[in-house]
Image 1 (cartoon, rainbow, N blue to C red):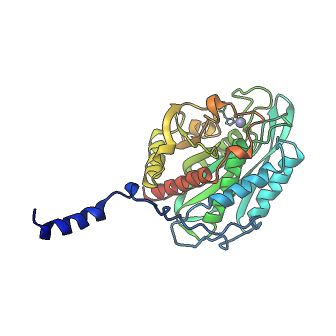
Image 2: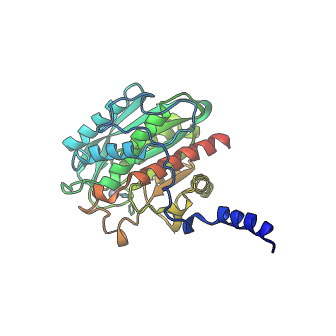
Image 3: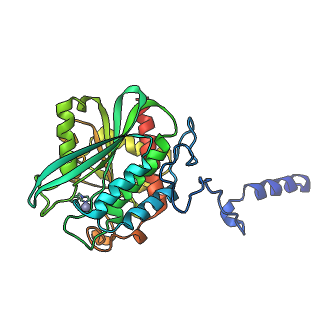
Length: 325
Ligand code: 1BN
Ligand code: ZN
């Protein structure tokens, strides 16, 4: 090869050399995050770095701060002072949003217990409702269990979802955020001793005729684990699970979804039984062999803001895909 041809060829080769062989490398550009206040303001309409009309994204750090504050209240079993405090906390963060407070009495092995579901409603222009739900109670009778992941993560994430949803009127379906009570068993998990809030909700919506408006019910439970591996849950509706996977893939998060499949009894079941399309986003593999699940080790240090962000963004993307269907 002549010297005249060799020089441009060497230059071209230098330009296509993979980045991994170059040293030093510059860190990849970080996604700009809305500034997270040390303590998020009680009611932040659109002042939360959220703009109406843009594709909204979850602020994982802010969601994590909510979880930190929730866990700071201590164990939150039904009937406890911390449980009441959390209800007030949620309501104070939802000022300006229409919130239905549905108080009911649950018949449990420990007698009649007062419980309350909270439902924040974000109206859309399309007839029909997408529900995103979680539970906010922690294990009954356990004063040593703070439920950072189980109860805390979903509760904090839904508050951050509210920040996104309140930023402007939706052009798709209405979205309702539901903080459900009494998911945990009072004595031993059984069909009649568990899922008190969701069973009450399904029955109420059946009676009221609300069920036929519900296009999808998406449950977020235990989604804060730093090692996020959401199951393909087999009591969920297959086409809705496929849509969640499509949403995750579009965002490049598919490696956190559906490596395992298993059937789980959770708050989506009463809605599934009433023929509502449901998807349970849950990561039950919490620590090796679930060692942190329902133990004193379910603490904040096991969680990550990124996991909250991934789950939240996938939920928002799933809503968009549902709107387009
Ligand atoms: C999820 C969090 N669940 C309870 N706390 C539901 C569940 C019940 C999951 C039994 C697995 C087995
Ligand atoms: Zn639990």
